[in-house]
Length: 104
Image 1: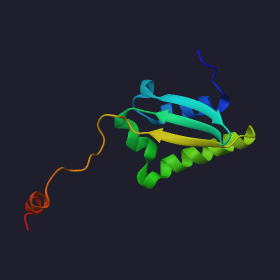
Image 2: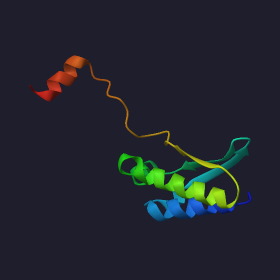
Image 3: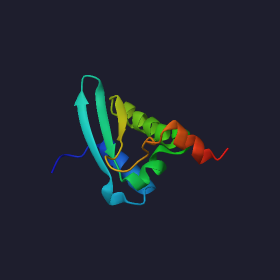
Image 4: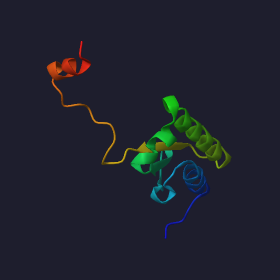
């Protein structure tokens, strides 16, 4: 089993506390010359809870991670991966079909 770091454990704990499906939470941690990159994978159903209204929850999580990073003298960034299936997809309607839907 891979070693867990303090920032990784913190992110997992925080996100699992916010979502409905904590077993789907996965955090990958990579270190390079730019600092630490944390990649968060969650269930599609929980995406809204982590992003938050206007992205405010995600911004708060990123701020907390930066503080944890500063304590450990590291620059920590968060990438939230969109689940492969589901999600919002652009409509494949033609302009005429979209206008008909408006029932003007």
